[in-house]
Length: 355
Image (cartoon, rainbow, N blue to C red; front, side):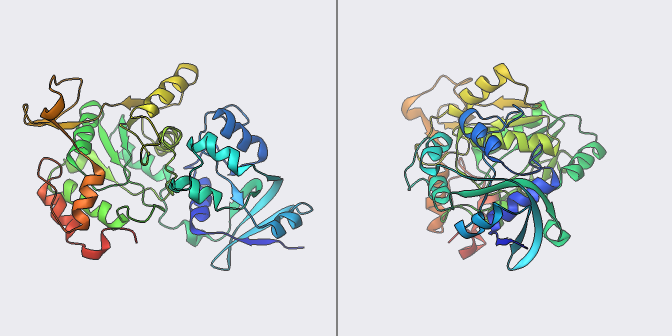
């Protein structure tokens, strides 16, 4: 008996990431052992650090058939793209698990809403892509490692973002360039919530910055086709592990990394990173940076570590504020975003935001 199940775009992204090694050491979708360990302890069954579940959810009817099967074909747009060796069939407790993963079960949290919209029936096992066309153009760790080596970069700092470049992020990227031989700007271009910047807007901003301001021989730009979970601290570590697999030696974790709303503390990701690093080696050095902001007295972008001014003397550089301006077709102030970058983004018109 041949069993098939249709997968969506986000599951396909995970499947491709498993195949390329972006999600190393995963070789397939998680079994119940790995899933429960990751949810409860942020470890895989072999005790290696992993913070975000990567699972295949299926309808109940497919789940029942899989209980007596050894192989499951995965289709995308009704075309077979891969198969799974069925190792485990299990049902999760989504309501309880989202509290551990996202620290909330509120449906207004986009990650929670997406996870609770999935089936609770999961199948775990090793996967094998059969349609190589779906991998074409995917971010390949073997290729990025060769690129860094060819450029002579012995140290590479990875930078994660889901927004066009503003001056606070520029500050952090230049800090990374001071420390490392190369900067790998690796924006998330997979699924994001409605109202976030489109892939085209984010890439257009960075193409402008690299083309006009950054030294080309020290910066590499390439998008990360992994859907955004908005899981805050856990996702910060997940992002670091991905960049390690891509060949980065360092990774920047800043203020409220991968957060949304006020669900996570300002530096909660730093706390989790320190806690994990005390007990385990991640294989990548984490640069835990303070929030850059504009100081009216100093007249520049600073952080609390090298500026004494507080209160009304400082202006936070808010991605939400920049989004609100651009939704009205307005230019952010120069202290928040370079005019050249802002113009490049605004030139996209109605293609700036996800609808």
